[in-house]
Image (cartoon, rainbow, N blue to C red):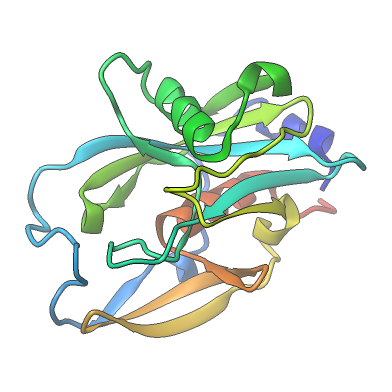
Length: 215
């Protein structure tokens, strides 16, 4: 999908927003201990967070999205693919300011140089396992940004064509034991990784708005 086509479809977000693909959502098949580092009070208070869904053109004008792979370790999201984003901080203009600040810190996004414009937000995602309510912020860049990974927060930057998240894109249904909890979820296979969870849900809703590429 070319960026101009995607931009046109995102210019006026529908109300209500279309739902993500149902197979993307995770379902608990068997319960157990929470993964190490996870919140144990699943009904406790949450914090505001924002993530950036940035669409930008490659050299040929095809729309891409920037994602990142979290470093390995013993934290709950270790090794997972994520959108640039993080918690709201004092002084942020939330959610747009939070999403842009985090993208600058994590993947080196210079919004001014890239000509970034924010377009709106998608449905808030409850990331209860880590205690956040994440607001996905949609944005478009006029030019392909120069990305630089933060060495502490990002193991790898992925630049992925938007077509991987359109309604007819392949989804792999996975059953996986995570810390004693058996989960079933849908994941987008991308560059040897699985895009699932809050990131998969937000990008699935983006795909539903964009619709089929040939539509």
